[in-house]
Image (cartoon, rainbow over the protein chains, first blue to last red):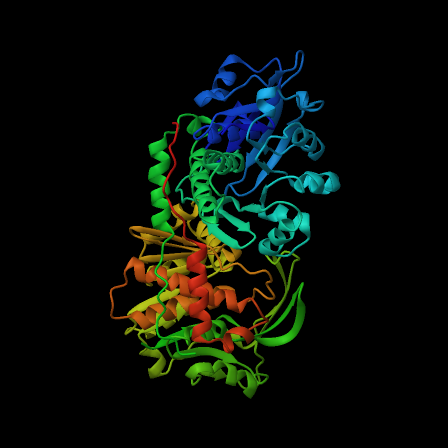
Length: 311
Length: 311
């Protein structure tokens, strides 16, 4: 089933303890599409400037993704983000954000993008997400990402778009910030009251949790001895998760299926952070994913048989 | 098999978003003993002052723990800690630490405590941990906790005692601080080069990971809608983990057994944080633990069967 993603396509300048890149392809829509295209073709929607070249466009086309709706804004510059990761990779400083062509972005979806079965609204202004949602009436499954900025300055619009999606994928801290709840579980239960039937709480290096009406599932991240660049891990995760659901559409979205999607997403994110930018996922193979899913399963199994307890 | 724990016995003053206690039983040894005693009798070693009453001593005796080596320092006051947890419970401010009788504590172990099969060195000055380790030559399994303070000011002694234990149980950030490694996996592998054969990385609300020579296991925390007081969760976890190993001693310490110990420990910690101080674990029953282990197992299972991938 086809997928449309609307979000940023960017140039990133990133420094981590393992190296530095001054200008590489990034952006939520790029990372998402590279991951999701392992399972289903993706339509990318987002603006780029005159500085966006054929080489970058070729990466976006990986595994047949459709770039007809990658809008070239003449005279404009592509969205630019510059950040430095701290020694432990868990925190980063944003040094520069140039919205550029994103400042006046008004998503225009072609018929093909509008008629996709699955829609992912990557992290952009919630008002724009609402407008895209309205254009995609055919979508059978819609997932949404957002960030603390919109919770702070556009909460009402954010709540409105959350009410119109099937699945909210958010960092656990942002889930708590959004709802005012003190635990991730309580925050997710609150969100489930307002439209979505699936909440995914991303937990960075610790993995992710899945909360639905009657299920809770938690999965640690795939353990890595070395993390080179965490940028885009969340969007890669979303691409894996939503891609898996798109590939399974038609089947019942059972908790078992969603759990498998979580494992697939977790493994994709683990590959993403092993190299800078989109490099690793762009050349990822199915057998690499399958092998790591098997490893992840072995790493999370335990025998629950309790000992004789004294209490 | 009998267990000896050496560590703090304290009064805690705690404020969390769910309430406040001005003075309640706390301390690493107390929390550890309450958890471990679900499986094996515990000898407690630590100092208390004149203000330590019969009621507190009765709690330490829960499930038959031996308090003969709880040293009453005449004219002294019990160790006191005061802290406030922030809204999200993940961070806390220490407002006051009164070492009191702990300032001149020199562990004196009775023959019974010295001859225990299992020893847990709770977080105290590493020099003291070394002296206790020397007194307990019969111990077949020794585990150690520590904290960032000792990494900063007593690193050499800490490294020496780490070299003389079987298992290091530490927060993941402290593991990275100790080794200078950038990921928890790399940090644990580094520690495994220097004596311990088991490393447990505690991850707070996210659970814990177990790293041995040839195994990696990660387990999320048991999810709670409400966390009332996180104080002592790490020591309760250690009590569950070490208690489980003590109860299994004689068997091979297989990775499967250690994973079951992790699950048992995770569940004990989840009960600890549901109420203030030692209250919940003091009245915990075996069937409550068994039921929650079963739930935890259900929450972490997934089917790894991959879809048809396009890469």
